[in-house]
Image (cartoon, rainbow, N blue to C red; front, side, top):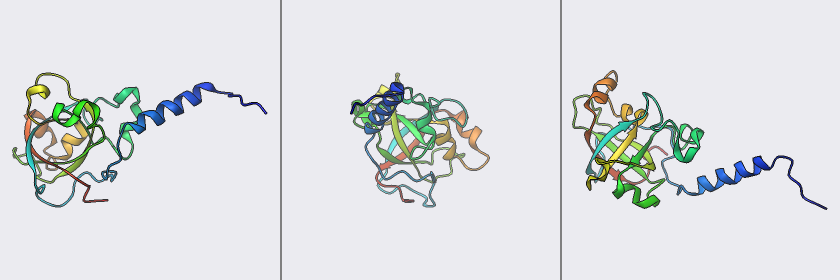
Length: 170
C-alpha cells in the first residue's frame, strides 16, 4: 500500500497553520466579549497605548506571520495588540492575555477589555523601556465611550492600566 498526496500544497498549508497556531500559548481570553462591566482592572499597572492599522481593522489587518484570516476569528476577534519588549519578550509573550482599561481621557469608557499579544511593536515609542501596547484599531476603539471613538483615536497615545489574568467573561 502506498501513500500519495493529490494536493501536496494542502498538506503544507495545514502544517504551516498548525505550526503557527502552536506558537500561541492557550489563554483564557477566548471570549468574543471585549468589555466587561467592572469599572477598574484589579491590581493594575500603568502603561501607554496607541493604535495601528485601519479603522475597525485588526491592527496590521491580519498580517500576523502572513496569515491574515487568523486575527479576525476567535479567540482573537481583532482584539489584538503588538507589545513592546517587556510584553513581547522576544516572542515568549505572544499569546499572552491582558486586561486593559483606559481612564486618562474624557473619551475613555473606563471599562477594562481583554486583548491578546500577537506581534512585537517596532519603533522608538515601543522600545522606550515603558510598558507599551500598540492596539489594533478595533481594540482601541472598544475602550471609548459610545460615540467617542474618533475623539479617543485623535488623542493618539493614551495612558492605560493593565493586568494579566483570565478573562472575566469565559
